[in-house]
Length: 110
View 1 (spheres, helix red, strand yellow):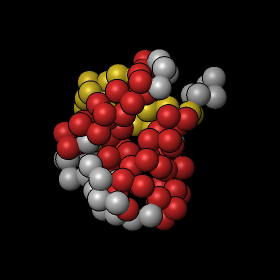
View 2 (cartoon, rainbow, N blue to C red):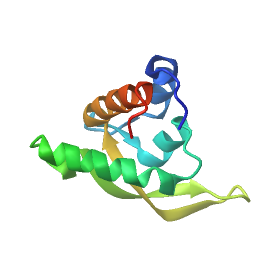
View 3 (cartoon, one colour):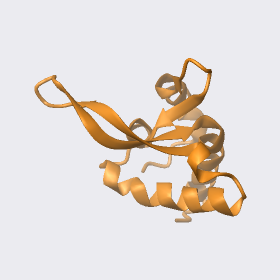
View 4 (spheres, rainbow, N blue to C red):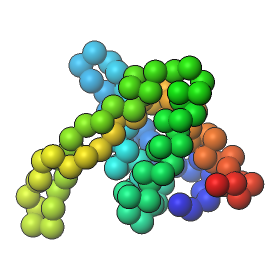
């Protein structure tokens, strides 16, 4: 992940935000990993697990903020493949988490 200030990527976060018919907002973890410039989604899984632990420790329901989903992904030929594991991350918890990641980058904390 690069150490860009969070403010430089905020428009990217708005671009990838998903809004359901009931106005629930979330981000796809796969799309978020790309915005944060992770080389591969599997490298983004440990931070997701740490964020889930922090969520639980702060007495939030993990399942309300980290919903496992199956997503459609475009493959090389332009076709779409379904059933790719992903997470729908609530924007509420995601914003807090990303702010903490940004601070961690400033101080080289992992």
